Amino acid sequence: MTTMTERPRSDFAELGRRINAAGLLERRPGYYAVRLSVVAAALAGGWTAFFLIGSSWWTLAVAAFLAVVFAQVALVAHDLAHRQVFRTNTPSRRAGLIAGNLAIGMSYGYWMDKHTKHHANPNHDDLDPDVGPGVLVWSAEGARGKGFLTRYQAWFFFPLLTLLGISLHKDSIRALRDGTVKKRGVESVLLAAHLVLYVAALLLVLSPLQALAFFVVHQALFGVYLGLTFAPNHKGMPHPDGTEDYLRKQVLTSRNVRGGRLVDNALGGLNYQIEHHLFPSMPTPNLRRAQPIVRRYCAEIGVPYEETSLTSSYAQALRHLHSVGAGLRG
Image (cartoon, rainbow, N blue to C red; front, side, top):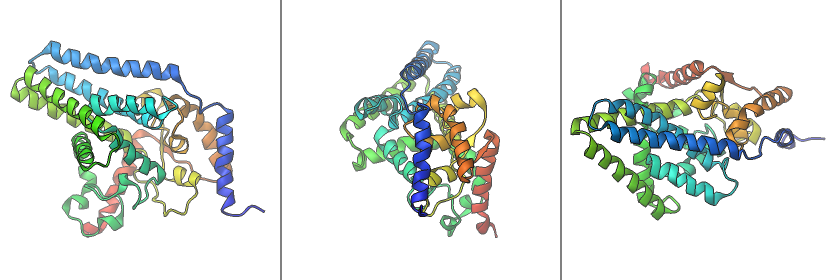
């Protein structure tokens, strides 16, 4: 007779068998060769346009373009961290350092450590750093004793996203300073190179006012895009208590987003959040093919499978933020 503790373990084993039988954990080198080439070309093209246009307010259009490209580079770094691109750690780490530290000024080691903890315990109030204490509060318990910002935090959500890019730079520097990152020396050199080259480019090519405007537009839009990429995935979903088995912990806390190829590319495949959390090393293009298998299997074993539109996912996240602050509004 199967016990309650054995049943969930066999549930994921069976799902893994079906996914493996479909060949969905196999590497996709052709896809990543094209994707990395396109993103690298866009990054080089954006900075080339910046220098060719020179001291002009038209560089603000370049700032907006580079904000999108920076977010796409961050999504590439995400796939590298999960070893979706390369099977082994060394090439994944080297490419991740180039994409994260050098290209966009984000510590690859810091982000990887933070993201690994998130995957291990998504939406757990004490163990997931993405829902831990911060500017935004995601649980009613955490809202106790907070002030005006938490009370009306749903209204501040989108404006606060404009600061996300700067926050990542700041947290990366802090992690390197505190020595909590492996390969601290290499990461520090690459991150410093990015910051020096970025500031030098703005100050040497643009007037002081144009440089400030470029920085604000670029970093604000980068933060908004990055925030909108990750916000639909877990916000407003249940918070586990730690007793759930692996399959239920990953499925019940995650939300998929419909939208077709356009949304797939814009969100870097993270719209298939359930499949990604169940199989983090699965290459991005295989997530779409895995979805019907996972959804059908969840229906078989009676596990709710959440999928909604992009706008509805944001609405759910905002409603959750608003409800968290309800006790403070009286």
